[in-house]
Image 1 (cartoon, helix red, strand yellow):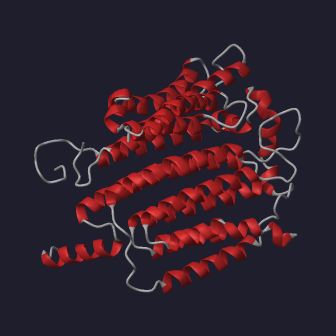
Image 2 (tube, chains in turn yellow, brown, red):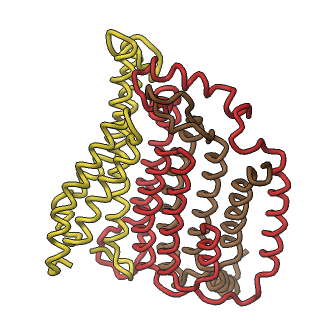
Image 3 (spheres, chains in turn yellow, purple, orange):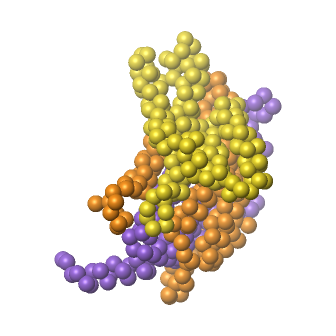
Length: 143
Length: 124
Length: 171
């Protein structure tokens, strides 16, 4: 599809805006609607849009397979890591109020890292699923 | 007033039954999965409709509002939506593999092919 | 309108049209959720149901290919079973509380505590995020694990190793 000039120009304008909006939804999930899941899906959709317009091999060079698979697992580890940090700092598993000098600030910090972990995993999984479906040829081979 | 109040429940039941009908009465596997997804979204409506309070607002605390809708069903349904898409993706991957193994994604043809294979090599 | 879209999905045979109708249905559901003041849920449903779900269904449809065939027998038994179930469910809804009743059990058990103390205890104005990440953090950990497991399952199902043999399956 990359020979269509209109699609290329529009994609180049819209993809940065989509990524920016995804980050906005992630970090403003505390003050408005949003949070980790929505932001992860929006960022994955931006990269899928790039893959649809410019071709899957190009997208695989920009966001390679090993990066996506690492992101998949890193998010869950980050979330569990916040829980373990709660144990090491004196509370129970997934206690946030021990993470900082002040319980409310501790909650804020815990929520920030936890939402980041959810965002990374959801974005990675959605992108990986798209890669797997899109790279399979009809007779069962692989591109 | 009661009749109008229950309208949201009735539309939920209709969507639920329609999704179930698509799952059990249609043969193509992808269409069954879409019917399952319709079934799941009707359950979201079943949970979110009772949480609304007329005159309230979205559950984001602000100085201008005093009445908020109930946030607890929102949390449950947020999880349910993400689990639903995970199930759909796994189901579609299974359909793709079934199609490659059997050559068709229609339920009747798959069962017929299994019966033919069982008749040709009878193994107890 | 959602009911009309659902009936169209059930009747329509062309699967590409069914996928597009499913996208329309997701958008209508997201709009209904906004009308019910569930803004977080509406954003997630629009992004997931109308965005990612459509891409996955189209990808799978390309690989599976084919029209839906007419069923051999008229589906009277499933239709009768669905109607009976719908009747039973509608009979059950008469026991549910009326729409937007502030005294209903759903509003009086633990939700007032979340609404009153949530912003103060966690410092986060969005009560849904506060409940999701802090008060019910275990559930969200489980859900993230479910998403990860789905990704791992799809990798296991659809991965191909190039070995040079002609048939499709791995041993």
